[in-house]
Amino acid sequence: MGKPTVHDIAREAGVSLATVDRVLNARAGVREVTVRRVQEAISRIGYVRDLSAANLARQRRYRFAFLLPDTPSQFLKGLHEAIDEAAAGLSADRLEIEVRHIAMGDHLALQQAFRRIESQRFDGVAVMANETPMMRDMIARVKARGLAVVAMITDQPHSERDHFVGIDNLAAGRTAGVLMGRFVGPRAGKIVVAVNSMQARDMVDRRMGFDEVLAERFPGLVALPTIEGRDNHEVVARVTAQCLDNHDGVVGIYCAGAGLRGITEVVRARGLEEKLVIIGHDLTPHSREMLTSGVVDVIINQNAGHIARSAARVLKAQCDGVEVIASQERIRIEIVLKENLPEGDYREEKT
Image: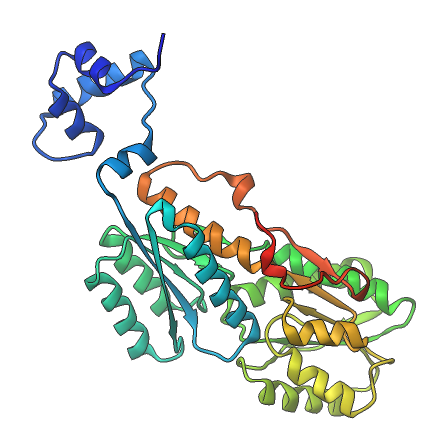
């Protein structure tokens, strides 16, 4: 016996094919009692809808906006390129993706960006932004209008977003703590911790995880108060230099976000490459060069290509009302050393 069809549903429920179509596509004009009769028939005969075929038949297209911070970060440049690649690869699934860079600290620009998304009939939004009351309000606003919302790279856990796509940042911070303790060895000392902004959830989680591990396993290492670079490597260089001037006994630097360029400039200028353990995040042209030269010891990476494809798949699943495949969308934490540095473009990995 073949798979049940819409004809079988209509016969089982005693209704027309047009009525079955209205119920399957949640259209108005069907009495509640009839909707229940059709749904019960679907359950009895075990009908499973082929959403891809249904969407193709209806010529369904999906329009997604990806909102990224407007900064000169090499990681964000690579992420933008990965999103473009994902869009090209998913075009056969009738997905259209548009990347927009927004000055996230500019409240007016942020409001205008979300209003344009509402007016231009997008189906979903993937956003990478600091966790602020305004961002929570913007997410609530587009959710109320029926758009799917994914938080990407840095989570918005107190918002109405549908899903988070990115690594477990608490685990990433704990990983950095273990690596720092192992690489420093028996020495006691202080650790400089640099972030973009403590308004970013990924930075908060990484800092928390890092501190937990040092307290639990490496009591001889003391993490200094967080320094913020605001996505500006010149600011990072200045505050890093000030921190080194103000504290004796620094044995390591943990760069939890953007800012590695500023940190390595200071370290190289002061000839501290052999004295400090440096751990950073995200494989970029600069971090690759610093690993190769031995200035940086470890990079904790998240695959930008996997993130881009996963965000698009999750948005589509939300639009279709189907379950997300958790194992497929889990973003792995990658530990990259000079010895295992991948050749070529790390975004080529297909997941």
